[in-house]
Amino acid sequence: MNFTSIGLNSSYHVLVTGGAGFIGSNLCEALLENGNPVTCLDNFATGKRENIAHLGSNPNFLLIEGDIRNLSECQKACTGVDYILHQAALGSVPRSINDPITSNDVNVSGFLNMLVAARDAKVKRFVYAASSSTYGDSESMPKVEDVIGKPLSPYAITKYVNELYADIFSKTYGLETIGLRYFNVFGRKQDPNGAYAAVIPKFVMQLMKYESPVINGDGSYSRDFTYIDNVIQMNLRAISSNNKEAINTVYNVAYGERTDLKELVSLLKEYLSVYDPKIAQVDIKYGPNRQGDVPHSLASIQKAKNLLDYDPEFNIEAGLKEAVTWYWKNLK
Image (cartoon, rainbow, N blue to C red; front, side, top):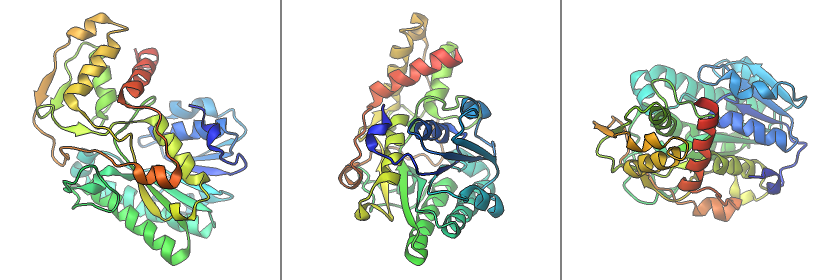
């Protein structure tokens, strides 16, 4: 997608925290292609140097290796910055269940450090990665921003606390904030390895090795899977919007359709079989439901459309085709 059509002023200096991660590195690329000076802050706990290695020769790109749990490093990264896209976090519900203290340190204390540093540096706007996990046990469908339930995991608690802190900083210090509740983002550069790998890259890698993917539960759980380019568009719209009604609030970032896990694996097998017909014969296995998982997730994106002119281009099929092509070329 050509993101220059959004009309983001190329003179804005943007800090991307977690800029070596999956979403962060894609944001860095899009901003640099638009001509923006970009600072990337990352401690490489989950981010990967290879995600940004090709950006090092760009004179508009500055890498700061630092940790958001260190206030002075946050302050250094915020120097001379106009806007912040805060992506740094420890994701994964299971990770937070296994180690709630570290998830809280990074996602809450680190988030607060970044808010303080942004306030002190007089940054124009602080756009941050929120999460659909905030909807918790709410059974309403589709998910509308002002109707949430009780969190179902430590991770969900941390992301909800982020929203509360952002709201207080808007009201108390006048810092413009926008929270983006991501719904199951996928696409190029998403890590397929490790204990907490997201389902799509994990399944892709297993299928390419003729290994049977294991679906948690009976395959009926569904998600609003959201391709990375839709997420990039939303972030750029969030920092470029001049609509005063659009700030100091939160938005769903999704496509607005849900796909169950059975259908997801079927699509992956279909698209991968274009490259290797034997993948179509790989069996699927089923395991127990995962603790803390929400059965179904579907976003209303009307608020984002109305206030930020959000217009997601990639549905699940189009996004998976792009993602599968990238994985086949880069990881086979």
